[in-house]
Image 1 (cartoon, rainbow, N blue to C red):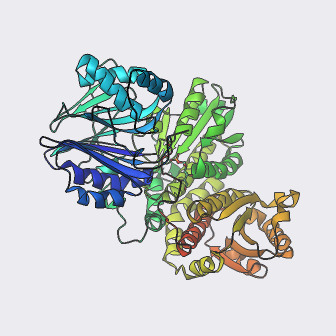
Image 2 (cartoon, protein in one colour):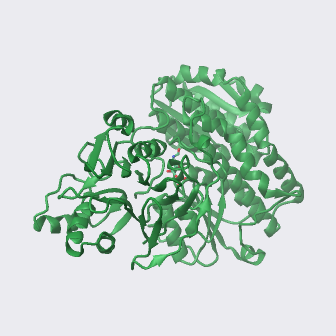
Length: 613
Ligand code: AGP
């Protein structure tokens, strides 16, 4: 939530800030703002409600703001409505210090009251402004900006990534981080801070990841990092291997469509390096056979679509491993007094690696002695760095708020991990192991074949159904888990009310909602339960539902006899079928949202990376 960027160097800062914010707008798009410092004009702050485009037009692409030092922000509102005043940067009362913030200052009210008693006047309703005012207060005390930042950090509670500039320091940008991502970028013409590497890869791939409690002082030629006691820290620098085109639309109308189309390649990149000589090889996983045999319980923790991956994996892992697997929403897990102990393997799944609830749940699991394994897409993200083991999905940057390729790569990676652990436990037959492995490798090809097909039928269904107010996704077992993802995709980007139900549960209440013309998306791709799926289709048809069915090619004919419309996907091993089944669901949501004229890549009220509770 919220994207921050900062630049200090030998080039005009404003266009660089706007360009970086454009690549991070998926993090929040309620308002945007920049502060730039120049010798002649001092601190210039421009901020406005609405999309970045409004800000960019206001300052003519940055041309209006002079200066080679600046900070920028794109906001997902938490404290205070999205308006011009609550937009960042926030400026101290004397107008000499400007800050951008991502995170939440939990004790801001108490600090605000304290400062108000001292006579400070606040402009906004935000928690962030308190930091600008507190900085001025401490700077007036010690006349040293680094020291003032240190004093402020000791007083605030909560999560933060800050970019700070001060009129008295014309050549320095200060940054600090705790529990919100912040990256340092070492460029040729200057140095950067950013919430996300995508914001700066156009300028540099040479980065370092700030750790909690660290403060950085950047000039055009140097980056010095200090710990919370202001003792210098040596940072490990690494090279980002994503290229700029990965974060651009490349001719597609939306990032979401581009990312759907990129799935075969993303799966290939995630799977190929991990299969050698017919075996799953997970070099980065440091679990001994002895440890794995001793695992008494497996927990999978995640939010949103990553949680839905966990749901699919629960079915698959229990089948393969014969061990209990509990899937819990991270926001519930952290407060449920979980039964985690030293014999628990706790798998956390997160595309961004920054989701606050997932991070907190992981810390709770560690505190209780569990061993944590993170499945993460963003290299160097907080969850990746704190987990005991990390396996990366190689989906590349995902920009659309609605996840597609990250979901797909998480799914296959979890299948590989399940197979690997089952093999160590000796709970999977060799023939089954080989069959799954062969099919995992053919997924990219089968998916590509689906994507190469004309999507006219899906576009036609979208045009036929886009006006429905409420849509049900029904299925059993893996189809139920996949339906959860189909339903979330639809509701998040098209704003149509939608629910996923386990088909067998319908008759225990929900079927009362089915009436003439209700749209039911019936999922029947899981071969072992196809007949059961058919019975449920018949049941809802009998109550007047219009049924759009999804099945596999070998069951198409049967399904077509009952459903109103049918989409069929290629057959693969049953445990892998959701990897193919989800694609038409993604496309259906995409085209429905397109028909409804929705803002597909940036749906209302949402943000890509949820770094608040
Ligand atoms: C799905 O389209 C959403 N973007 C959302 O549900 C997402 O999966 C969830 O917020 C978890 O994010 P993470 O994988 O980055 O932790």
